[in-house]
Image (cartoon, rainbow, N blue to C red; front, side, top):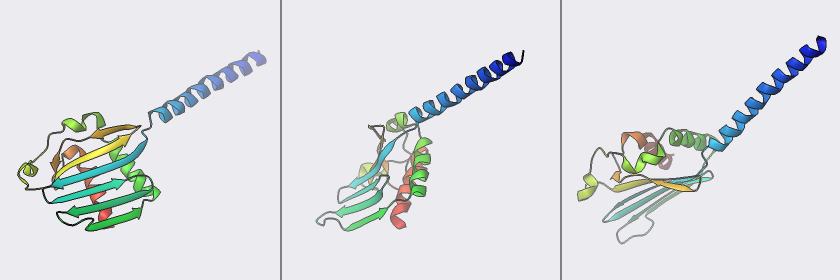
Length: 152
């Protein structure tokens, strides 16, 4: 009888222990691996590029007739990267190319025509074109966070 209880307890521990490790493996497989996020904003006379990866943030602005008017490069710390990962995780990346844009001033040079590119698990997801100052609601938090890094 005592042997049966020990065997039953061992089976119980083994059963739940395996499920726990299976979940951990599944979570690891489903974790998104972001390699880079970029924003490109263009109009006739100006081009801006924002790029962020796990190691650094960079910003370049080029105006007509001038090259690299403004450059910013800075190291990204773990907290900044984790914040970016959280913002990306909240977005349905498969649908960012079909997002409704709230305004279209970029169509007549009223604002820079802007696109967001997210490179995840070796797939690049590109948003629909939007006004730099007015991104679609679904990606606004991520876009504004990246813009804020330039000011730090």
